[in-house]
Image (tube, rainbow, N blue to C red; front, side):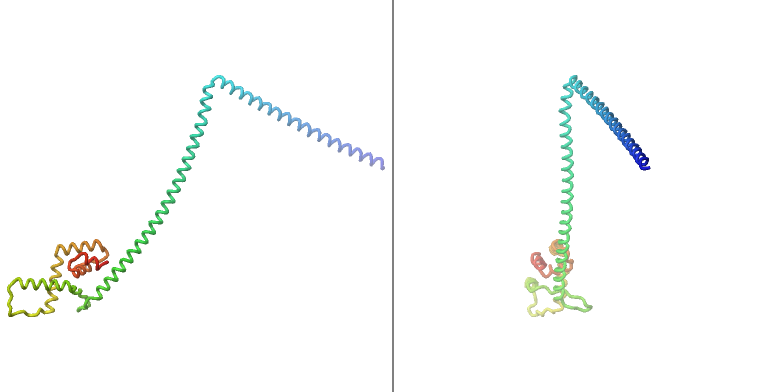
Length: 240
């Protein structure tokens, strides 16, 4: 029994070895076949390249000038292409810089506009405060309206001097020199003021002040001109 079992085991081992040997042989044949195919492909590729090389050599021998011209043209074309690419890159960078400068300019303009608006608001507040101070010096009349201020001393003296000169220039009754009534003087001053408004010089001074101080109302500027006795420089100094 032991001999039969040992023999069966030996036979089984022999069969396994035979299978392994056959498998190794098949693998070797496959490797050899693949190697032959690879060599054939390489040989064909080598022959094709050799043929192409010989054809190029034949063409170069047949037309050497054409090959020389082509060899000079190809680098020139590559150089032109490189210059074109560099030019496009520079143009793109320039456009980016211009866009950045434009954004900075817009921000700066917006900032300057805000500063100008703030300055104009300050100017309007100053003009309003000056108008309030000027109006606070007026006299309250019936109906809650504010009467304009009387002319300054210099203007009043000039008006009186003009009246004195007009009185001395025509014959007067030496026995009658009544004192002027205050109410009558006020009415005369208002009448003179209304006449002054139609004076071309008065209108010119008012219009010039309007150009210099566009945020001031015309009645307010007329009051300043009246108080300045029609002197533009004096009125301008009062407003600044």
